[in-house]
Amino acid sequence: MSIDKRVLEEVALSQQEYDLIVRRLGREPTITEIGMFGSLWSEHCGYKHSKPLFKMFPACGRRVLAEIGAENAGVVDIGDGLAVVMKIESHNHPSAIEPY
Image 1 (cartoon, one colour):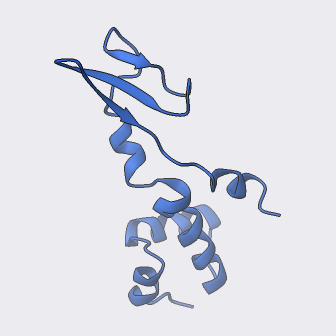
Image 2 (spheres, rainbow, N blue to C red; image 1 turned 90 degrees about the horizontal axis):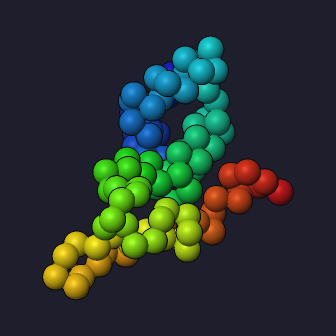
């Protein structure tokens, strides 16, 4: 079975992600599996777009006011008495670990 490009667009998977799925499974995925990967690898559940961006921020140092994970957020001093607070709501994370 060949997955149509339109199906990948519907579940927001790139061709590269699809190719990775095929390599890891060692076969073509079923339409149900495509839907599952689309959900689990989505921004909503897996933060596939924002996670790499957050890795660009410092994790420690004099400008880090709250370490990553300390308050489920990060706070970085940007100068002039200002700070940037970053938090990702992770209420979906447990569903990826224990879906039932």
